[in-house]
Image 1: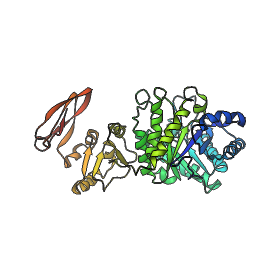
Image 2: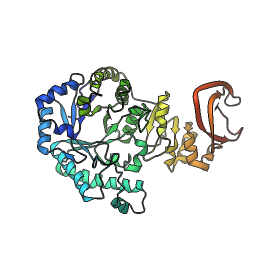
Image 3: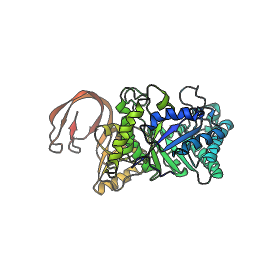
Length: 443
């Protein structure tokens, strides 16, 4: 039932954390409360979680809840959140250097494979433990190297092996979080992992871009859908967002949904059932979703495939966090690529692209084929003297605080005009050689 659609162009699902699942004991009372959502949104699937932060749901109760939803024509899938004790500071992953937590993962996978034909990992399937056992096991490797190796091991030896032995046809889904700029440091690998699991899912949460820990521009909800589609073509099953820190403006909540769908999501998952039904801060969001989904459904079959400037960002790249999403908010559309876009006519390279050891040769081929390449100051800084292969520009340690700007209308021979910004901006000063390089815009 994976290809079902509750709307004409997409399906809507809701994720039920294990606490919500365990509280479903009186189905008549739950039905009355569930209507707060279903009176406005066509729910086609529920994800029923069996484990989170040391709380479990029994197999018997999972089957009971599964039967309840399926009797109402709603498809069911399993779910796991690999959190450790929720009383620890911040979000704590399980520690796979200990037999206890390895067994927790194995038990949760087995339970899902026994009850469901597919299950999803919530986006805590990362590693951030630095306990003595992890430090000893890491040895002389960097945390990045250690965690990628550990993630590969547990995914192959525990998750895939356990799930397929119990249910060979089970669809194993890893949902990736929206903080892709830090993936490699916590064990996520967009090259390795999507090749091991059956499907992936995309976190498109942006919330309040100014007053939250991550400061994510809204454009991410679109950009990341396209980026992850490139990571696993045809196997990126949907986008997932939540209402948290969106009470300052209801539109900010709905924008996550619009942009997720414009990124061509096949399914949208609402997190979480308990928050939307029980939290007074979010209960009104259900009614607002009705119009948003109706509007999007009316538009989607009239749209073609997303296009934009080819933005190359290799898996495990670092640097200039969220620069694509910031420029996207300025109106520049991007087509994100994990692999170098050899055929693109315009290519955007930010600092992360310099992680590619073959980037110089690839750029040379593109330029000789007539492509235009746009690079950031961070990219120039990371390449260092190697960038001199292309143009005599270097990154200096000096900064400039600018609020007025000028441009050139004759390809850099003259700078003219004066445009004022709303506020001063601190920029790095780039050094170049006059008459070897022409300045088209100035601060």
